[in-house]
Length: 278
Image (cartoon, rainbow, N blue to C red; front, side):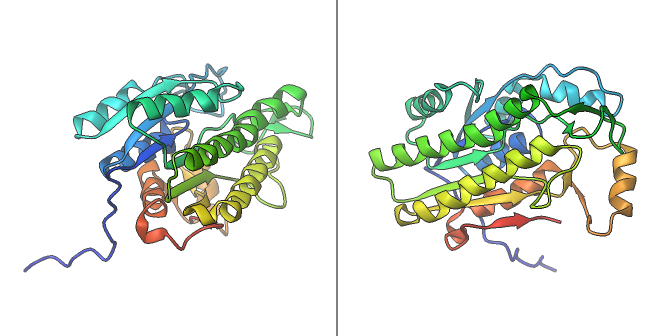
């Protein structure tokens, strides 16, 4: 008996160039691998972060954040794809232009931008201590605010601006922007700067969706479910199981499949959306 054909359209990104930030592990790495498997040439960016030990966060997650992207590039090339990686601090003014220069020199103009990188740190307006998952909380300070907004908000705005400028310069007619968010309009208790910076990312991306639509560019934001990028513990699993609105603990590859659709030709009418995955 023959198997039933897939109901999902195949995604062909041949000839396209993607820039994926925060792609040394987790969702960013999965997205880079998936877009390359669909035929895109991919520039991966990353910044190795040396986090202090935290009894509420598995060491595997700390190791993931401290790694380079060599293994991701190797996996892509071993599978027949095309990718290069650049370590870069997205908080630096010159980084967006430099990244687009590198991508253009290696592959040609970027027409897919994935804003995945995050300067995540758990901070709070309450007294210092631990959150419900046992993670160390820090009091909101200039350092926690600046770290988060520099990457999730400011860098997102500058990368979109550079993307749009290059798009016009090269007279492109097609483009895709995808960002990642978390938290919500009621804030993100115990990760307050993270939630606030993600709200800014959402706003920048929605503005891009409307301002750049006549250039053939779509812009969307993905709100992933709890995704196991190395930080999910048994306590997190219990919290998800007990929560009335959380359904899945996803794998990064699950989220990457959604991103691949959003940057495809089939998603040309999908723009200006915050897409909640459950």
